Image 1 (tube, one colour):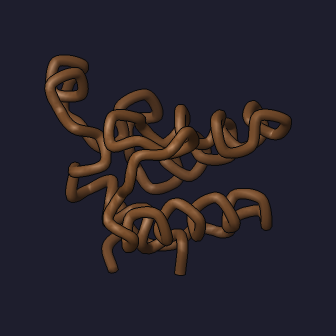
Image 2 (cartoon, rainbow, N blue to C red):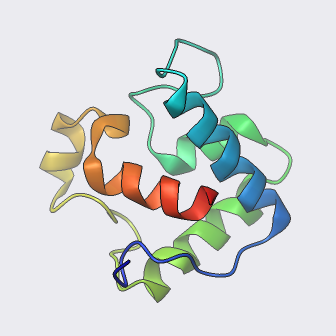
Length: 102
């Protein structure tokens, strides 16, 4: 596992989020109110746990930075790429989720 996908220490709340997100991915990414193929991780986290949203998002951003990723666009090369992409079909994002859900 390389630096960009290796698991970084995380809170129980963030671990639970990644595990639930991976479960949704493994289930074929069905339409639901919380997760969507069109959302990035921060949007999914906000819908998953609205109360702890700010804390969970800050922790994720910290993880991105520790892994050497851009804190605003960790899985895309530019905002143009991000806007064109189907968020949950990005192989880098999927690898990140899988590594952190383990």
